[in-house]
Length: 373
Image (cartoon, rainbow, N blue to C red; front, side, top):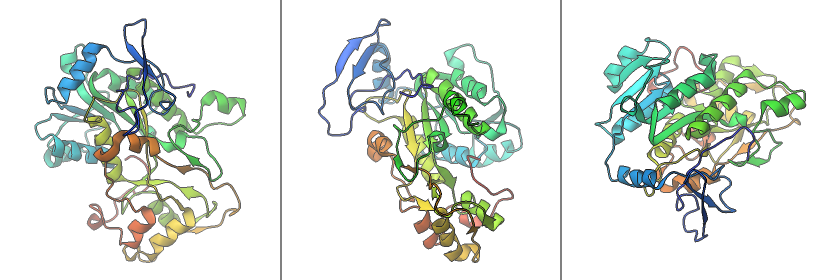
């Protein structure tokens, strides 16, 4: 168990094991009257032994019969990922109330007119009763937008009524680096304490993400660690196209996931497994199966007619560490057929096929780059 994770996981028995598994679970009752499960195969699915009361389990079953609100609060709803989540949720639940919470009112008119959602400014309303809370909450704002990031995530958790799902979108950057080895949901996570012991200073963004993850899991919410987000005109490739040259290792691995696939994965997690209820305090990963080195990635960009031959030259040490190769096998076991990625061939194939997506015709935005925005 990662030292910084204090999850209150009440995993549903059948959704906690790979489909088709007949492994039995040992049940015991905790001092708080909650049912706990233990299985050697569950480390990646449940970080602690706490489970919900039987009443809560019964309520979850009723939820999937359609007896609950599908209202959704999206903190960071003005960004690319937030808007996609809003649209996909609206497609699934047209009658749901959706509130987009943003740092400013800049995008409110567009969010209201285009997506038909309500809007408000962070930190949002202070709530005192469950009637004012939301059954579904997703926090997808990047850490660069605020100094009190973990506190904002904590406030989002206070807006959740714990009947549906709370989800925080983090980054696979929180995993320890390896030299070309595969890393999945069970991989070692960076920690401030460990870094201090090693005399290493973690990036401020990583510290913020770790703090926010801890707050999320304490609420019983879930964490979705996403690799580099991209679409045709936004992502690491646009940053390197603008730079033209980078003094970094050309062979270093770049783990990626298309914005649309990240959004559909987030929605699949919010909806639960569709059989037993909603996920609690789980750690998910979102990444494409086909990782690529920086040079291979940017060579594919240069081949794509959309970018008029623009690429990037990498002049760093080609014999240095290539970093980690992310995998999401445990997440795939949990969400199963409820998530079908649209861009499942990977970034290089996406470029070789013309970089065609819903963003392509709009052209590059004013501020291109990578991240959640």
